[in-house]
Image 1 (cartoon, rainbow, N blue to C red):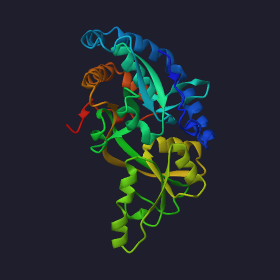
Image 2 (cartoon, rainbow, N blue to C red):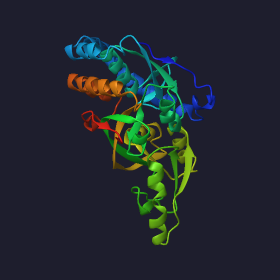
Image 3 (tube, helix red, strand yellow):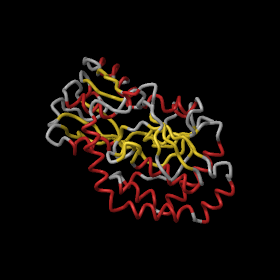
Image 4 (tube, one colour):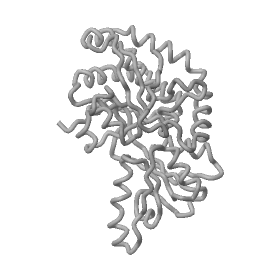
Length: 311
């Protein structure tokens, strides 16, 4: 199945960030490391479509077979979803491979709609997308807007300037008086904001926040010295350090009490349940493990699909 792009016309600047060079470097590196697995992945996907489980799921959920579903993504996270540097009409990454595998199992094809991260769930709620597979953390607050099917644990990395001059060692009092660059709508934003009172009680200034619309801009803020840290998915942080080993460091990795999940409209329980079953088959076949290895993600983070909902 092809990965066609529907242009994000409302905010064209979202498609190309000011730090395109970093994204391009990382995507090329990841793509080169993954080339040897492409044919294996294609063979696995073909076998998946023919599996007894997937054939049974297509019979159970015929409403999705032959359809084109829309996946809302924020394509600024190399390893998860980004523009293919060899073909500007395609997206590549683990989340894209996962979406395509789900489509192979359930018999649907995909169209991708790129939006700002904060617009992912509103796009789903408005009916402009059928699902969201975009390295999004499933939280109780977000579960008010969508049902989630989890597939990975969450480990965050703390990105800092080389040598960690501000001695930041977590989302704690070490951040008092520092400036954090974060993505609008990310779960890390309230975690940083919640440090205001503890910092005040310790006689220290509260941390400041700079909000951006994508990972690359946050990383550029740290590189430029406008921000002292950026806290996000550990794979994103590790890739930034690999891109700028002389300028950036990872202070540490922290475990957050969340899961990475696939967002589905609360009104579409059939799609939610079909994805749970298909994801289980994908994991059982070893495809998710292979895809995470292909894109340099933590293979130990895989967890069985679980529904997170406010119902």
